[in-house]
Length: 585
Image (cartoon, rainbow, N blue to C red; front, side, top):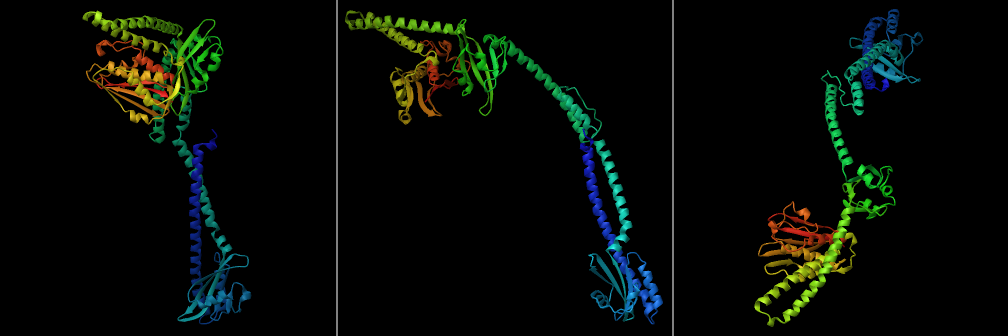
């Protein structure tokens, strides 16, 4: 570091400036005081000159003695001239002999003759300097016999004060030097720890958190040094903890079988774990961006720009490769940050080829089974109707058996129809929506009309309030079926003899929200995340044995997602449940 830029040099310079300012002001005051004192001394001399001159004038003029007094006065410091005039203004004696006998009539002389005390008058010479004229009356008893006058100017005062000024300047210089040296020594002693602190801080910045500064002083800088030592110890422990956490995260990131890719908001790859490189075939071909990593081998669904748009917090996606063999990667893109800060994406995916094949086989199986069952069920129901037309030929027991068979067949037929409907909407992205402008109230009315809820069920539905909602462009059949499923579940899974169901529909933020609330037993928290899975029902010990495939809520979820919305629930055991789904309009 340049010594001139050090704290000692800056403080020394500041101290010198302050000392110089103070000494300058003090010196000015001292010089002014000396000057005023000298002028006061001159007044005393004028009085003394008047008294000594009186003996040379009265009772008889003694020119020799008077001239002697004048010459002696001129020898005094700062005095430039001296003279004595009589009461009429005639010069009796003067340091300038040529002026003896002159009658003085200038304003200053007239002022001196008119004053009965010591009078100091100032006026400027033609050259601009100040001239001082001191006069003292020469009095004998009550009678004035003359006037003693002495004069001096700025130049003579400067010469008289030159010695004291030199002493003051010398004292000021010595004081300045002493203050500068003292400041340098004191500041240097006070700040002796700062270079050590700076060096220790540089070491800590390089990662050496074991560095310590030896501290003996108890002043503020000593306190700072001790705080620095405590900080390095804390940072050392924190850094060690961070290293351990980093190693754990690195192990998880590198060892997990899921593919993990961390990108910035534009899709530039920051980190890619070995599983992701293996799944994308990038072990020997590193990629800089997601577009480069996918290249032409993988077909993303939805498109990569949609995934990177970050419109949703979680965006599910699939990557499909056809050759050399079918490979389907399924995962989610998690947008990092919050609504104000977009920090990038964490892509999490895995090989879902076998899973998708299983889903396809299950879907095909459900479709085949449901369609194969529909025809024989229709034939059986038709024949039952024919038999019921000839009931008079049957015994009461036979008629009872026919009625039971027909009831069970109709129940099975409804389940098959639901199964057929569900097989068409298993994958939200594959649903072809038949959108049309429909009033939300009409959708709920149609759903309620198609249900046989039975006795003891009270449905609260304010159709008039819903009639004020504007029409929405949705697939009326699918949305109606979704509402019907929620209402049917609310009744079916409530074991109470009297059941209450409330249906509401509202529109907000570009979505239409359908809500079905019941007063049933509620749902335990551990069961809630599973309810929208296919074929899942809560254990029979909790709800009783309920007929059905467990596809109703999965159907609602698929319909909502196909419309750009979502499905969810809020429930607490003993306080009923509230199921809802939203559709974008």
